[in-house]
Image: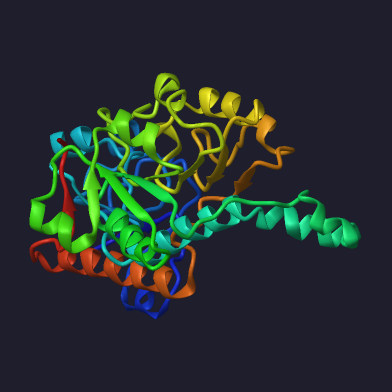
Length: 308
């Protein structure tokens, strides 16, 4: 099976594939020999599919596949897979890191030391942060990653609120130590809000300007999911006004970040690195390769995704 890949993926499992050719997106020429496409972050729509008439599989490296037109793929009989499960821990770890960095003003403290300001004035309150231990954390979306965040946050003795479209059974809530809230109520009540829903038509701008306005003054807003889940201009306005703090790993037009954020002390910015550990990236490659090998052998795909 001829595989066209947008890059070489990390880890030894990638070398198990025998017929791989690399390309620089976007694809511009027709390739009748290609049966599988391996991508990360690239747009795959009708125009790409038109250039690959023999395509059988789009194998996505990562959990989110919002750049792939699932309906167009399905219409041409092209399967789509992703790499779920293996990046839950790394992304949950980053969410906690952003919470800690924002609430305890870690980046500001680092700059304070590097600029030579550390002296007796550090006791004056210039770097006073907010507690993480015992704070109320609102988790928007309680899937695999949201659940991993909840388990980590329990170690900080945080009060855990959650929202998801289908409420958990009461016994599952008790086991995880979480309380259900409608989304608006969660935003009003939480000191920290962390977002863990996939990007879909139903979740685009789920956190809109009205809902951003529900956040309490001084609240911390963390997003390691997808930028478009939030009304980004409204979020930027709230941060520029100094009403809230934030830790943001994702943005609407990556790699472009709103210029207004770059000089703000009340927001911690990272470049979409939720899964960026050596161990996780190699594990993702293993899952990607498993899907490609299954397609080549005519076996059921381990991780298919479908248009909703």
